[in-house]
Length: 167
Image (cartoon, rainbow, N blue to C red; front, side, top):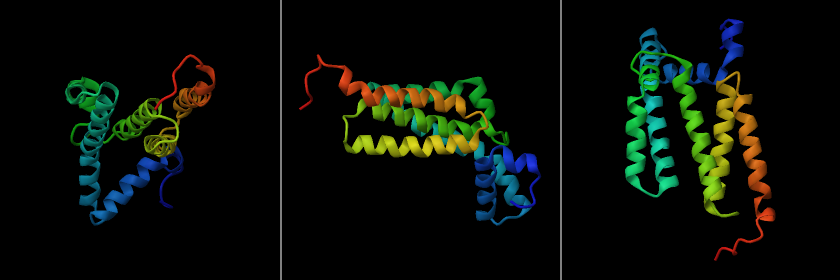
């Protein structure tokens, strides 16, 4: 990492480190770098699809909605282009973190306070926000709505008085 130009090392460090680590795992040769750069968008699409499926099932309670969500994502032209074999672009990497943040927010919104689901949602949100912050220069655009949502969720139990207690 010490030999990278300043603009590359300071821009989106998590993508660079992840690709570098992937290339090192597969031997660190030029061929390994080429394979990692070619295949990482496809792997990113697969991970994003898994999280989108989980999100669809979490929100609707129906597995068919999760499958339909993944199918629709797969045929979106912009997503298909950015996650195709050999299209080494940072957007495919960003999709993983965005999907993790949205899935974690859905888990937090749907879960009761202080449950196992809440802990899972908080951990996922922490990892997702940290990953997105390190992977995207304009991550403030993500932090503002996430922060506002967390603020509303934290005061929600004190605002809603007509709701029956959960049993």
